[in-house]
Length: 200
Image (cartoon, rainbow, N blue to C red; front, side, top):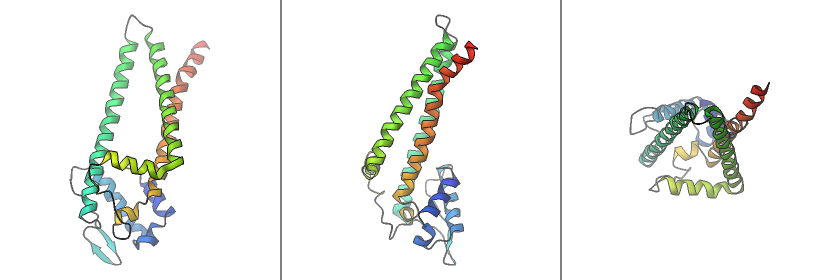
């Protein structure tokens, strides 16, 4: 959500400038305003750009604005979940390491490795589902994540979906999956690497 590179890649790959008539520079400005929105305290998003030489106070209509608010709440929940997971992981490692009744370091590494394997396996399973039927997975995600139908948009009239077609989200899913697999792989291999280093 906060990577300008992903936005620019999507704009280029899906020829958003040609499809929407919005110049690339203005698309990049809109992308920056969207990223800013996810990191500020405002409830309503404002996408102020220039379109065909005219200033547009807000590119998004009311339906898109309300949907973006829902998305923002979802993003906040993800951030909170990540923070809580990191805190719990850190607390668990500290408790195991400083527990006098156990060999803390070995136990901590053991569970880190298992967590890495679990994460790796889970992402592989989800990736297979995404490859087989991303359309259904994408639909299921929206049905579960949102309590309304504001996410049902028309690319002929709604700039939000015109700027970010479904293919863009598939690419984001692939990127997130790759990064998560990398992290899971590192955690799963970390105990073995450390054991080998200790033996030397």
